[in-house]
Image (cartoon, rainbow, N blue to C red; front, top):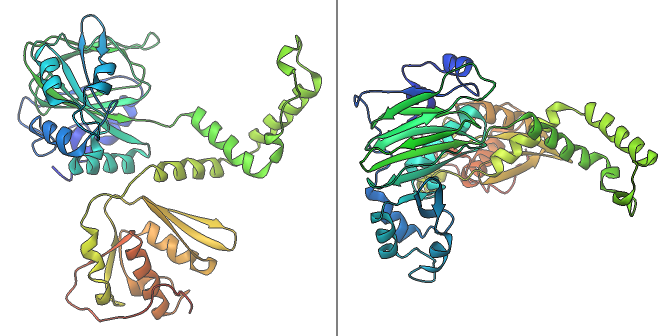
Length: 398
């Protein structure tokens, strides 16, 4: 279950068919008739451990009831805590849940390594920020009132059953979808689609994987951000009192038109690079036992086989006289001559130190690779042949 990916979530639907027929268009339900489950991914037994030992705070942990509309006892979540960490009072949560409550843990990838790995795998497939929320529903809960999201939802039914109804958009030609989800079932809900549950008279647990898809509006905002870096006129203040004028000032209109013309002519590549940087910047490294890698640095040799650590997404960029490589949790800078090597690393799945482009000496290649291991990007694949190399990683001189 630790290697779960989008292709497995959608099986037997292919990725190509899903993106062509369903993505951003209409909901998709995949019922597996309990022939498959998500065992090992997350369970209701883990909820108390997370509450006690990971100390999530409101609004990442919430409980509420639904009586036609879902309501959160936010004030209770803020005040009913058991110590300085702000951990919710479990006895209070027990009472609220037993009264027909719905408990949910937002950003659960921050507390579960298996869900963190799943979210990262989906981010690498969809190139969009992904988070997850776990919903534990009491058997007496009235369910979720009609609501929609600005993000796409991939729903995994973990325990119990729930009956969901997903309405179609007014402009869509498809019919509404109503489906009973059993453990192992999957439901895709596109953005803006109204959806709600029908009471199933049994407790349940589902995982909502939230995909914050990038839009054309995001790309335009990114283009404006990159334009700000090169055109300081965007930082100039508007004339004092311009909001009180009944007619748009001609000078203001002319300046706005000029700036919009610059935006139209701006480079989409720069805007996409800015979005990519934002995506990587919000990622954190996965817990993959990297401390053990640091014990193997003295075994690094030219024939050592290397891989990028699990869940690494890279971006190579220039910064003045240097070149950098950005990856989850860090970025490393080097002399501009190293750029071909950084591109090679970013684009390669597995390689030997000796495979790196020959813009550095063998000695400097080892120094660079050692640094990238220590900075958290690369990992050594155990091999039979090793040679001890003892070089300072601070110098990358040829």
